[in-house]
Image 1 (spheres, helix red, strand yellow):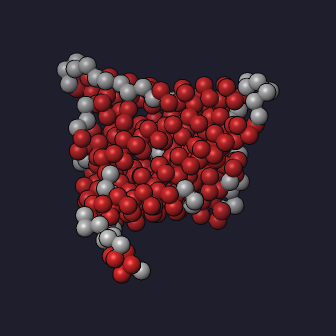
Image 2: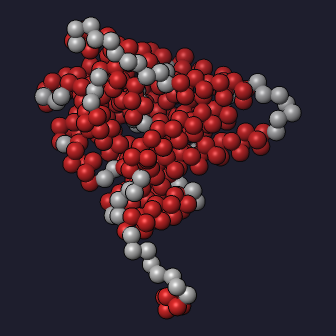
Image 3: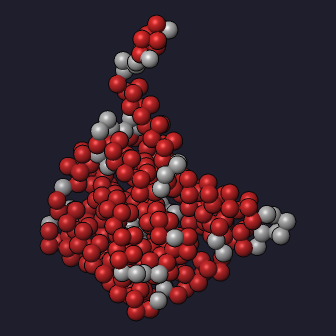
Length: 326
C-alpha cells in the first residue's frame, strides 16, 4: 500500500503538527459516535500522548460550546419542572453554597493557599465549576496563573467524577431522580454533571440539568459578594462582574418549549436536544484535551487537596440529603 502511495506521489506529512491536527479532528469525529466518558477519555489520551494542537482555541471553544449546548437542552424541558427544581431546593442550595464557601475559606487558611486561588476553587466547587470561576475571577481581579490553577483543579476532579459518580450511584441503587439531584450538587461543572447524568439515564439527565442551572443562577450574587469583599481590600477599586447570560437563554428555551404552538412537531425539539447532546460530548473531549501533564504540575498539591476535601464534604452531605428527602 505504501509503495503505491509513494509511486503516486504521496508521502506521509513531515510536519508533526499536521499529524497532531489530523489526529485531533479524527478523534472529534470518533467522539460523536461514542458516550460522554469515552469522549473525555479520548481527550485525555490526546493530551497525554501527542498533545492538543489547538490548546488556546480549545479553551474558548469549550466555554461557548458548553453554553450553546446547555441552551439547546432547554428545548427538551418544561418550564414548570425548571421552576419547581429551583423552588424545592432553595434553602438547601443556599446552605450548601455558603457552607462550601466558608469551609473553603477555612481550608485555604489552614493550608496557606493563595487567597484568590482559594476563593476560585471554593466558588467553583460551591456553584458550577469553570463557569463560576470565570464569573468570580474578574470580580476579585485574579491573574491568569491563579485562574489556570483553579480551573486545573476543577477539571481534574470533574474528570474523575464523570467516571466515578455513575458507578457509586448504581452501587447504592440510587433512583434516576436521586442521582440527578446528587450529581447536580456534588459535581462541579455543568458539562460533567450532564455527562454523568446522561450515562445514568434520561430522567437523571433532565433533573440534573434543571437543578444544576437553578444553582448556577447564584453565580451573579456570589460574584457580587466577592467583588464587594475584594473591592474593600483593594481600597475601593471597581471590580467587574461577568453575567452568565446563557442561563437566561436556557430559561427562554424552556419557555418556548413549554408554550410552543401545537403545529410544531415534537421531533423538531428532539432533534435540537440531540444536537445539544452531541455538543456536550465534544465539550467533554475538549476538556480532556486540556488536562495536560503541564496542567497537573501547575495545579500543585495544596489547591488540589483543598478541592478534594471540599468535594468529599459536599458529596457526602448531598448524598445524605438525597436519601432523606427523595
